[in-house]
Length: 557
Image 1 (cartoon, helix red, strand yellow):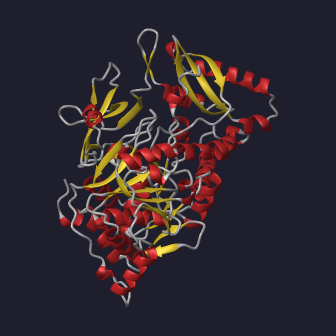
Image 2 (tube, rainbow, N blue to C red):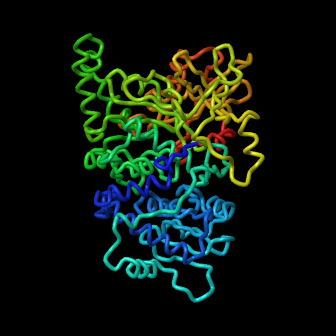
Image 3 (cartoon, one colour):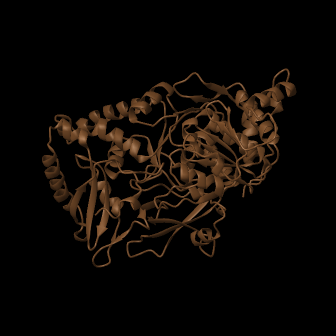
């Protein structure tokens, strides 16, 4: 547990606001809305005053639901610096799921995107006092009966009375809050369809920030493009909490992060660090790099020593420039990176590193800075913060990954049974992943424990590894490998754009996919053979961190 004053989670932001008062802090990318650290602190003061006016007490819960924007961030920071508990709700949750979370966590206030609110029902919210728009903080709805001004305009009047000459950096003073106290409750979407509230202490978030400082992932003046959902622990920790604690500037993407939009944002912002999920990088690779290196004469040159270095250097520079040209590292997390993509990026010496984590660890468990990692691994466990071990390894050293340390959650909110099931008797957290740790301490994740399949003679089959191979083939956008009785079947969402470009009819596409199945099986062990590929007409439904919701498709084979 971090106990020194300089490591206190709330005081980290008090200090950052004071030291970086006049620096630009947050921007809604694509708009003129930019706030300095001083302007953020002033808005947070007004929110604190409004919270008090509404009867919000220490450890009360406040929910925020919407796409990334400046007001989302200020709502989060206002909540935790006030002493309340923030409940971030992923904007992709269905209204009924969001309603369950709001009621289960007994939230008193809700800050929400207007379009999402249209599908919600205030009458079904058991403890909400007021609902505010994330667009402009206007009051949307309230259950308060008495005549009482609870608008942001009222809070502005209170601010003007308190600071007639304006607020200064010295006026930023937040209440003491121990790192052992709860900062947030994050409801995981997971791939099982059941959401649990992860109770995250201030200590876990402070440890992340301290680690980011020590590794120089964030620093005064750093620039981040936040396109991963802030309600998910990964983007929240690095692009938001870490960057702003250091005095950096974060640009928020408040729309679907299509590659075209992201590349435009990278070009304009020129970020110093990029955090992403594999799907984004894999799409850029598949659409921009793979076609380039597959065509002669490039494909021939890449087989010639010395000449290949010239081409690879040029491709590397093109890719670096596409991401803005000024970043020193791109971190991948949230899901395994396609081995072919990783191998090529390592070949061109692209500054890529892979991390591993989970919401229950706020989220970071392992990471190794570039250069220095091992291909296929997700780095080393964070020294001084986390530990990991492999439980019940098989003959290949593959077993259940267990972790413990500073970043681990307190448990699941109001769910003692799930909490007990997730921890061993001696305090290790069961990640639910299968993996190995090599002699140098590098962690390799093989797949989810729940998705592992058994072959006809009891062999362990890791569908994610087969899918990675299958996704490398032409005409395959994404896939799921499932078990039907005693054989394996793959669902494939085809690359219809590529098929159209090559003028393939539906029958010809089906024939091409069948040839792919045969070629794939040549790369697989006998017990991993795919007996059939079924085409699926749409992109698979995913969690916000872009993992396929497998449970939706198990009955389709």
